[in-house]
Figure 1: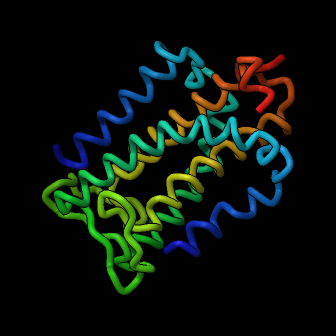
Figure 2: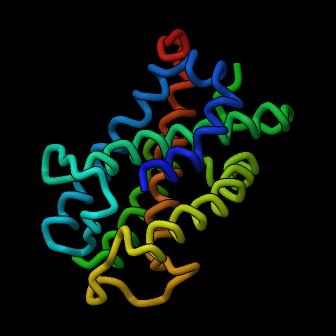
Length: 102
Length: 102
């Protein structure tokens, strides 16, 4: 699960490494509040058995709120991939206004 | 609240954030929709992997039961809310000069 989730977005990180890693603090400031919100939802869903994981197919490490390690990584990797995607679009379509142009 | 209800709520919150609170209005930007169009197939791929192999399983009582590529329709709402809120914060941070140095 973890390997595939990372593999699905990792090539984006490589492709646009310089652009986003240079602004990793900005990225983390954008991701942190959203990740925390979604992890609270995750904790609620796990506690109420809305969804559950096959223990044979996850590493088996659980963080706070009984959330698997993979879920914590998910909420960092997926948002990073999304940011890299919109930055890639910006690079290709330079005339498109996104709203933070200088 | 069921997964269906929370995922709808998450989309509403993300839309309100983007349009009225942060006011990035990414929903009116071609760059956002292009990015989402790129992300969506990858979301389908990862979701398909995680759900078809029963790595993640859902309580049938908390989803409406419509599935795309094996994953609950609610996952689309969940993914949309996650991506929109992260990108809205990312672009908003890009506007401020202090965050731009990060």
